[in-house]
Length: 352
Image 1 (cartoon, helix red, strand yellow):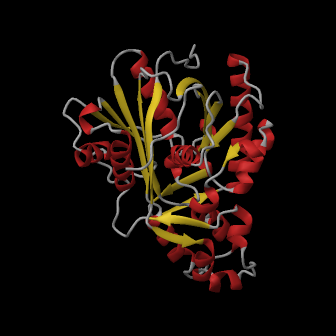
Image 2 (cartoon, one colour):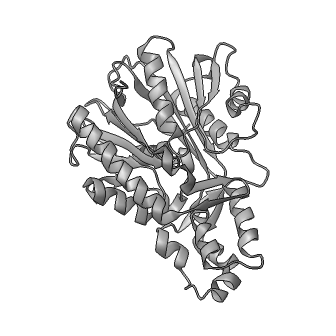
């Protein structure tokens, strides 16, 4: 019988994020779609109104998903004083891949100049890839198989956004086709990196325990690649929330979790409607949920660690508190990871 993991010695020793350099506001997207919205009698402000997303970031045309991961990892090294030679294990956890082969992790490995002894691995779990990467990194550290594991994600939504716009502006787009592609319009771009290892100082965020459940029968509710993404948003949300309730119940049964246990919740960022439903279903206080989607949209696997980094820089992670990383990913999968913030926690150093 599979048991939920409890970690004994793994902490997050460093973290950093990278923002796509190009700003794309929801109003600009609607401007591009104006002829279609008018023909379908859809109101102005629909995108921001339904999602709470005012803007998202993009990487330049021709950029690959690895770019955000490489930039975030380089920022981590510069900010925290670690170097490529310190890394024993690399997990690339993005939804996007540079190519079907070679592995995106191998491209990141080369770009960062990581040593030959460092094993690069692509780890995919839709938008939950980074949380699963932290889980596997923590287990490797606990088992003494590595000292430092680097977990990264980089997402570039420009190709799928531009391809979707071209499709929607073509002939024959009706309301159903528009709303099947609506979730694609929430996507943003960014990168994130975290370094996992033993903490000799006792002051860094400690990975404590995790629960996860899956609903593989719902794998058809969201299908996508660089050419586009079709989503049954209503059913995906309903099934996802149902799975989240079961997963949180598993955390309650295994670890005594309650809705008010966590001082801060860093959830996967999809939209305001999704986040509200998620919080209401689990009974989580709305003011404790850290939100990045209004200015960055849905950054896939990079969203959770990116939002953690934002929360850290904003001083929202308090010494002696408990934090949860939570999310629902296409497939469906749900993961919830508890992190303990030691009393001596001082936050991240100033950017390099």
